[in-house]
Image (cartoon, rainbow, N blue to C red; front, top):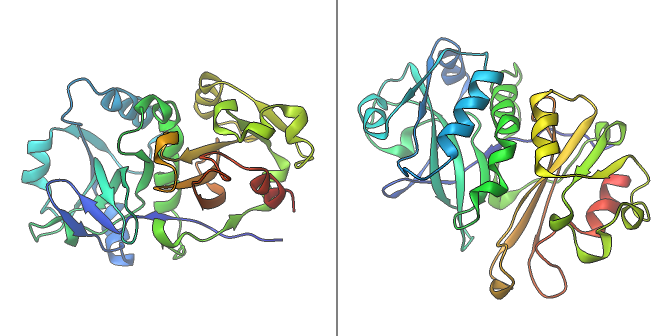
Length: 278
């Protein structure tokens, strides 16, 4: 049985410039439990991010009090070492060409540079130019992931997205795996085709069904969170990142990645099914 825990920690934090973020230590976590978490509004007036994140926080967040603030207020408050923050940001990973959208979940720091802000449990959402509707419906699970991870008493291994560890948790076999047809390789876009590689419970669903399962804290459901270039004209220029997440608490049960090319599309692959079936 292969079981391990995953935390997604960014290597570079991009808001107005690029800077290195350090992982939070035990002393930062101790401060976090007594902090107010400030949810920083996205500055894009047309973005749905603020609405979805606020709804997810109101429904699922219990570990600290939280308040919504503007980006300008964040600049004034970010030096408060007794405050924690969630802020949407673009991330450039070392050794990767692409820029990703993250929810950065960090503690304040007295220095006025982003690189000093200790990372608590940041979450990758998508490539920067992806349609935000590809991830907004999963916002509840991302909030659960941040809360589940930061609440752990042990020192969970942390990782960079560019050095991702393979995670394959046997608990997944006891759940029903929910997949979106459009995120699958062409040869496995039916439940019948999937079962040739994966004999455990599986279901093709809609984004609305995944959103509902997250809202209901379904213990029996896990779903795919995929990050990829989404554009066939960019073959060879990106990676496809695949995370299977528990609807109940946001735990990552499987993670993998591959380079996108003509033979391996930006999709969940038969090889992924074979791996989680082991």
